[in-house]
Length: 355
Ligand code: TXA
Ligand code: MG
Image 1 (spheres, rainbow, N blue to C red):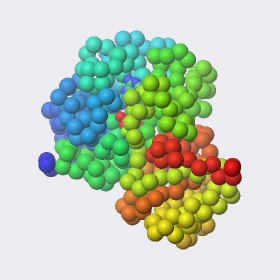
Image 2 (image 1 turned 120 degrees about the horizontal axis):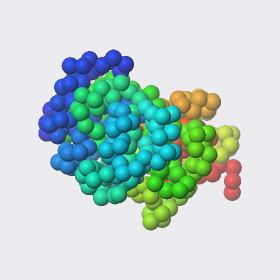
Image 3 (image 1 turned 60 degrees about the vertical axis):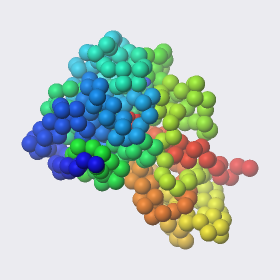
């Protein structure tokens, strides 16, 4: 067990002494968790083999699932990859810094462990002054998966990071809750047409406006577990985002969803189970008998995305046996939310109003 140092900083203008302290850990091969606009990441020097191995170990992450490499300047991409396709240039110019990860063919300077032996690399430039300052001061690209134990919901606050990783990492830069709340969109530019492997903070609709040819990988909104051989992204194969409790997602028109959620909740309760409901502002008053939490208004998908992982963690800490979640429309940030919910449920999806 090591002591994990908590460095509290302002999210816009972080104290540079604390950033330098954090960067010193990274330079020495240590592990530092830091905020991005999506979720907290657990950072290590991406070009230091030992540091990256320690990163996998701290997270208990399988070695076949590579992290995203974070840069503070789009120019740093060139030494990490063999070619930068014109489409990538355009996306980097228009959407970086931001919640968009691009997959490139990787160059020789990247250690094999950093990319889990693949011939590709995932890179993004986060839109967060603390993350950017840390990368700059460290003087290296930073490999950073989400700063949770493998399989847990991603952390949207420093408290979540400490709940999972206290004593396993050197430091956490605490700049308060993250603004987007779901991870970046992962876009593969090594295939034609370009393909979204993980929907996330940059909506599909936004990418389509710039790259009309972009496609959504079938697994991104799968309703059941697909054949892993079809998976292009290693993360697709692993159990993810899962709370401790079992999770059921109920999808369909709102009135039918509400009835189904109530019916399921009643029946679980009759069987002695503690039920948690993930509802929305418009529906929460229907579930007075249960531990119910609202993700936000159905007309504000960004707020729903922001609250998702925090509420999954909160329900877990209230020791519910089963979580029943309302589905929301899979558009804009709702697509990432539904991808995470379906995956977290192990594809335990019920279509309300259909028989
Ligand atoms: O918002 C985010 O992306 C956060 C913050 C910290 O930046 N990071 C994050 O990293 O979510 P992680 O490691 O938890 O998720 C990275 C995803 C995984 O699903 C992984 O399989 C995929 O990106 N990935 C990494 N390298 C890849 C590659 N070369 N080809 C395809 N997928 C890759
Ligand atoms: Mg993750």
